[in-house]
Length: 73
Image (cartoon, rainbow, N blue to C red; front, side, top):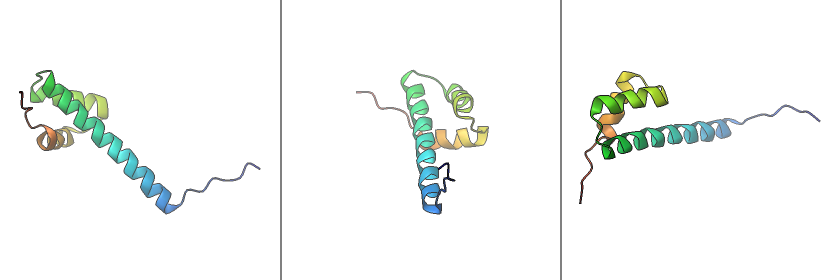
């Protein structure tokens, strides 16, 4: 009883992949919502930094990747 829990290397990789996926999804959602609410790039980048802890460089890279303007119908 009370044994040590051992996480295998593959379990570690799976866990890290899931965490990265959640983080990237959250980042993408912040950018999308910012666009929907008409925020400018500076405001979106500030939110990314505040809510995800990204550096300015990483926030800028994500904004460039996911920040395409939304097409309105």
